[in-house]
Image 1 (tube, rainbow, N blue to C red):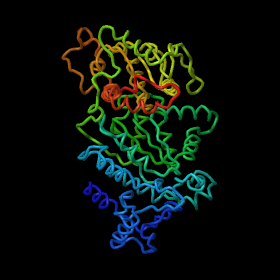
Image 2: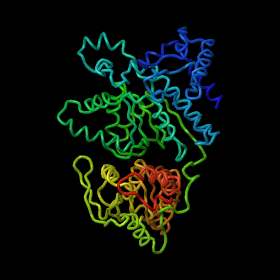
Image 3: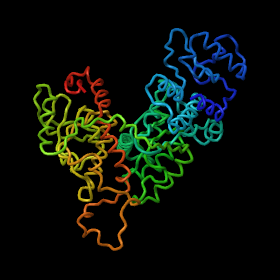
Image 4: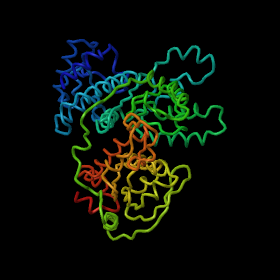
Length: 501
């Protein structure tokens, strides 16, 4: 890890700027010793020496890089943190993470560079909540304002688009970065599905405006200058058409985006309707974000996978699921209910009680439901029991898309999943392939061949299936169930069966 730190210092030479500008209460370690000389190599070691004398070097390992954030005695030191790379080192040192993943280290180097750029530019780009955004961007004030003032506006640093295979730690390192940022910043961490639902909801309220997307972008910039979007994916033509103009406005308003995705930018919305109208967004993305691939042969989700968890298969699986579900209610009666989701929609739940909901697969995945309905579901329930999950293929393509979305939303809410299924997670998706993996036939008689009649060639589902299988596996692991139990131990309805996991 020292080599990584040296690489960061080599790539990001610290400029001679006053770190007090980053926060009203931020000063250098040297200032603690009343040495107000600018940063130098000698001053660098002085910083480390003073940090050690104050007992701060262990907490702020980045003091060895000549940086330190000091908080007045009346305030908590924990508010100011050294950045994602130091946090990564700390987790390895304490046994929370395994060492030696060069792919994660390189991703964290990129995140650390962005972290330091944001700390440097925070006051100038309006990251602090108490900084008036209207004075930071050239989005108003008339021609005279734009002509004279906008030239001095600090341009926001480039964000980061992190992509790679499933289970490689993309979400973990992004969250590590996000958690290191000051709480007083305009920032938001959100799943892509939730982000787009929020955009559509805002657009409904902005009907009649000359340019509603510009109005929405301005609202978002007032709330969050830094947006971290998990699982960036584009499958819907409406979303594809919105994204180009939306991010044109967002980037103009100074938004910095950090995103994770399974797809490289040029692979987003591949083969989608009217994709030519989406292509300018890819160009904007590459211009305003550093594109970094995190590749690994290890799927960390599967390392801790349990044998079965609450995943039931074979004869009697449905009956077993029902018995387990009723046992989880701890004596409470199961009744049908209705829950409200966003934009005035309502979702009927056939059987519910004690924070648990029970559905047949067709009641959730073969009905005209979407991410909004699933978000509403998991805002009301922490456990979902889903009966009769079938093998997915060409005959139930739409249900396959909904099931993938359901698993994504459920995973993002860290909900518990109990199900009965026709096969293992891998078997559920084995009939879904990308065009690159599809078998090539010499004639056009594939539809007449019984063994291939249900084969579904679909790039979006083909790429998404690995993520879904990985998440299904993790959601039935002992570690995941323990985390879920700890989160709900203090709830009104404790979960006895989960406590034993």
